[in-house]
Image (cartoon, rainbow, N blue to C red; front, side, top):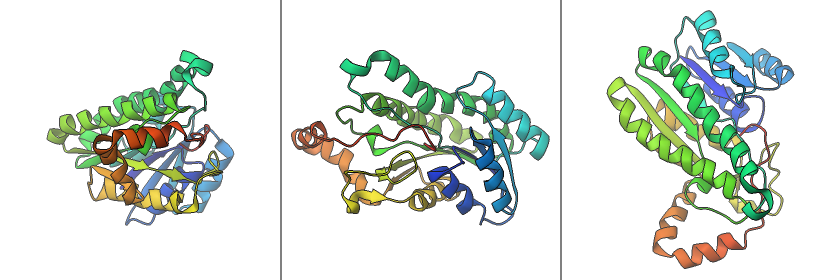
Length: 253
């Protein structure tokens, strides 16, 4: 199995790479910006290569594809679009510039990379794509509109892509974590029962990709939130309006 994980230098991406490396005959391709961390991670895993690249760069998708063709003969069994981040601020304060840069990283980069690698995934079918979204991709919060917009877009696109690619043998799954303690998100102000760990998300990514689940929440009880949004919208709006928790800063996701 050839599995490519973006945002692999820390947090959820690193935990996912370690988890997938335990699968039989797994070879992991690590993608992130920080070359030193990728080198260390590759040395830790039994069979791993790496590409140090900023995924918002114009040539990033082509560079990743060239690596797969050179190192793995163009085979790709699992693509994990995990890289991303966010910057806190209301629209009135941060404006379109914040929306643009958040969309560029959280949505555009995943779409561009998937477009470049989709022919490899189809040729390797049965294969899978897992897009790491967020509960914020189902319910918006105050002062995190840019982050929610990017994750809403990722979820909607993933739903359509799943329907389109089923005929080609490419499964598409989405993973929607709640609050996860990572390098870019220490979890300050989040009650401990609501704060999860990267290894839990890694398990969910494995379920979505290798066990072909479409939608996986982490922890599972977060699945009630989008349901409440329709059943009790006033209650959800009161809670999210008063939320003071910031989205993760740019890092592993």
